[in-house]
Structure formats: C-alpha cells, structure tokens
Image (tube, rainbow, N blue to C red; front, side, top):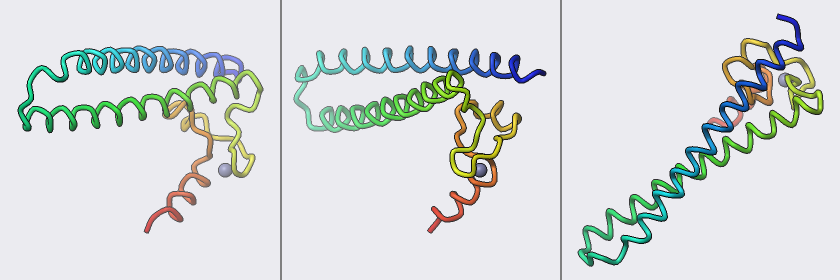
Length: 121
Ligand SMILES: [Zn+2]
C-alpha cells in the first residue's frame, strides 16, 4: 500500500468512527432528555436511586464518547497537517499495524508502553 492510499484508508476509518461517535452521542443525549422529561413522575426512593445511577452511567458514556471523538478529530487534523503517524513523544514513525488497530494513536508502541509503565502504581 502506498502512503497516500494508507492515509486515505485511515481517513475513511476515522471519518466512519467519527460518524459512529456522533450518532452515539446524539442517541445518548436523546435518551438523557427523555429521562429528564419523565423524571419526577414517581417519587419512590429506589426509583430515584436508579435514576441517579442511570444518569451517572450515561454521563460517563457520553464523556467517553466525547473524549474519543476529540481524539478522532485530532487524528483527522493531523492527516490534514501531514503529521499523522508521527509519534508525539519521540517524533518517530508509528507502525502502520498500530495505526490500523488504533487509527487515532498519537504515540509509537515504545513510547506508549514506556508511558504505561510509569503510570502504573
Ligand atoms: Zn515514540
């Protein structure tokens, strides 16, 4: 695969990922709005607790989806800039296999694993 074809393929995957995330966020927002609307109908404590849990859960889901969306958008931006596939830490090339597995990766495998080692406690 030539680099141009590779980048074009990565862009397609990233765009598909971005669309899926946008749809997911929209669905979560809708679900959230529905829940807000139906809130306050029942006043049973257990219901309220379930409500709080559900709300926390979709907040977490939504913030995960948004984080991911940001990473996907940043990767698309790097393709435009011509810095896609370059490790943000050492400046080396990120292996194509890694980019295929994780199209929005910003670090090469060795920097990523070094980071994970230092983060562990
Ligand atoms: Zn690196």
